[in-house]
Length: 194
Image 1 (cartoon, rainbow, N blue to C red):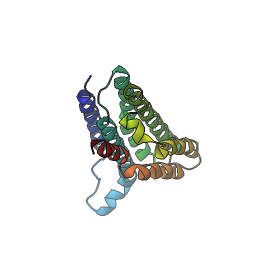
Image 2 (spheres, rainbow, N blue to C red):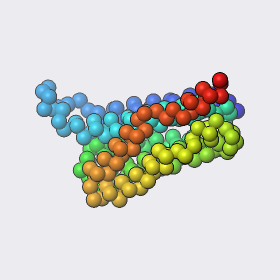
Image 3 (cartoon, rainbow, N blue to C red):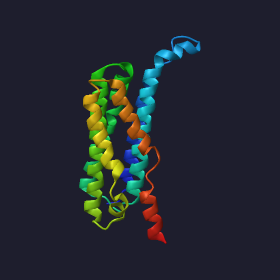
């Protein structure tokens, strides 16, 4: 089956996730700059989650660009990814409202870990359907960022019970390594069209 419905649905869900997250940002109580100070933890959490959603959207787009057709397994793997991403607004709001608390920082890490696992499952589902010599399989290669990210999340989850700041530092680190879009698929597409 064609992939256009999968792409459109995923784009819509990701847009709704961002919309829900931004609705958690409340208008400051005062009219001076000091009124913004209590909003900084909530805004920081929103910014981090916005980056993560943007990273997933960008890499999801590139991954599907390398995909010719989808099957039922890919559709379910994509829904699995969207499920974990749909939890970002709740965990973002919880962490932003309780920025010094251990449990919200740990649960945020659990959601990040599960989203990374779901993304990996989606990648493997596409490769299984497209074949081991597919564009996506060739582009992924060793995928050091894809392997390092879950390890950082696994480290950050128990670390959150020691220091939420250190756990959040690991979450920021992972976002920063993914901030530069993954160009492997673009390079492979360009090589195949030459």
